[in-house]
Amino acid sequence: MIRRLLARLMPGGSRVARDPKIYGPADHPVRRDQLSGGANQVIRRLQDAGFKAFVVGGAVRDLVLGIAPKDFDIATNAEPEQVKPLFRRAFLIGRRFRLVHVHVGAETLEVSTFRAPQGDEAADEHGRLLSDNVYGTQAEDAARRDFTINALYFDPATEEIWDYVGGVADIRARRLKLIGPPTTRYREDPVRMLRAVRLAAKLGIAIEAKTAAPIVKLAPLVGNVPPARVFDEMQKLLLSGHAAESLKSLRAHGLAHGLLPLLDVALEQPLGQRFIDLALANTDQRVREGRGVSPAFLFATLLWHEVLATWTASKGRGERSIPALFAAMDAVLERQAKQIAIPRRFEATIKEIWSLQPRFEQRSGQRPHRLLEHPRFRAGWDFLELRGQSGELEGEFADLPAWWDRFAHAGPDERESLLQPDAGGAKRRRPRGRGRKRSGEPTPPGADDVTAV
Ligand code: ATP
Ligand code: MG
Image (cartoon, rainbow, N blue to C red):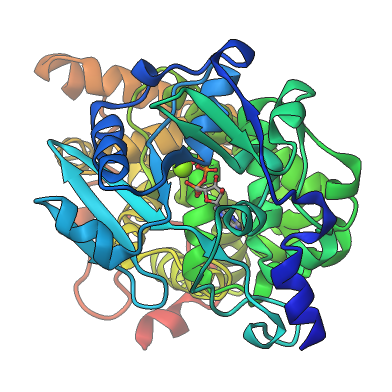
């Protein structure tokens, strides 16, 4: 009770001032015309109705750092029921903590009411906050945010930045610092550990020593966070354009283990590590060039070496190649679902990319032509190229990526000349029924038993 009272009186601990330090337009580079039209409009309407309203969070931080913000979040002292009637297209979102989504043209602005940090009783046994739904003052709203540089408020009317937590100084010093005591703040929400790594990599700044120190010990708490939330955060991290660096940092802080245990397996072997490094470098480059990136492709790369290990082991036990691959894919995705809830819509694509891989090995008859027509051919081919670059493809398959490059770009006659002779026309002459097997596939020991099932 007393702790709760103290928390309300001194939100975020002693680092939070009751009155903000106000930076005028001469003291910082942010200007109102850098906000989107929608952000300016929504704030003006709220202010005209007598409320306080600011741009807050990532957008202010990015603008101070000279980075173009992804979106503009708005914080106000108006409660959702007071915000909604001010706009023609406004929708109440969320059950526990309600926000208002205001649509202006093609833009959606998230308007949230200043909220207070919660007391002890709203936490689980590890200190994780289970709800977060009490309105509060602006100082309290600053205190419940994660990092000092994420708790700045910009008022477009005056072009002032209001700073309750020393965020402007930290931006200038290029350091990422949690508001309040780091251990408590990570226990309240372990996702903040992932955010620390992601934001430091994205912004090119350092995690301050006290903020970094507890992560190694608390990393396993990420396992208590609902997998869907971890997936969202991982997706942001992987598509940030700084995935390679983020992953390196996750590993250095012991976070890769709690998060993607299967990834550890891949990273233990040089081949797997090389494959993932290449995939992430490739993704980062695409993001930075503004080209599309498929999350499914990315997750397919992150989990591939686990599939490969499971698949190879099954084949070693005598299982047939293709059924063993499908079983390995299911097993890996199922295990991973406990840590990260990869949405079903991605799962289908991930499986397609994996299951196309053995089909690239078939270079005779009609099969290569049919593979070219497959809707996921391009993704499967890109994946094959990564496997080649990482050194995974050996022996008769070492030239597969080059062969497919020629085949895909060749005219009809040249394609025919590139095809390898069908293995004795096995397709037509093969006996039907029991004992049938795909041509070109070696017979593993005990395969007949498996086939007979
Ligand atoms: P990005 O540029 O990647 O969107 P962001 O800081 O804007 O980074 P959001 O997830 O959009 O990240 O969150 C918006 C704001 O909400 C943050 O700037 C921060 O103030 C607050 N916030 C987000 N996540 C947390 C959290 N886990 N704990 C406390 N505050 C948070
Ligand atoms: Mg944001």
